[in-house]
Length: 136
Image 1: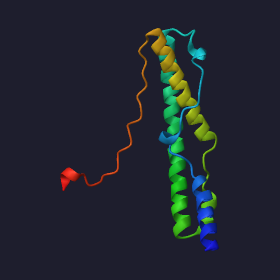
Image 2: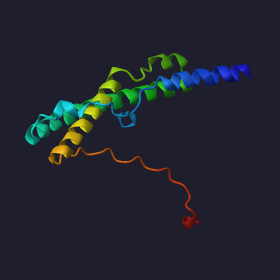
Image 3: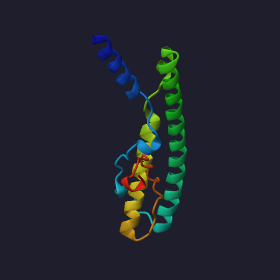
């Protein structure tokens, strides 16, 4: 019984070490004051730059998450030392969070100035399919 608790605790530690997908990372707070002196045109240019950097950072984070998932699968099924190759969240996740915060700050400043800059939001995650009572 004690071995089960130890195995469960080890599994929890390993799972906590996996990198998150970019869509699961929350925005860090970035003050809109940084952008208050920009014109709408300047805000639009900054929005394009930040959006491009955020897209690149999200792609790298998702790649890292995929690699961790693969290492986890191999480690749990075949070869436990593969679990040592999971990287977890780090500087890349912090970069994604910061850029999401910058996009929010630009959007907030844009709203106050009437610039109408709106970033495309991530699509909602699909809900699990289950049997609906009307389908029976």
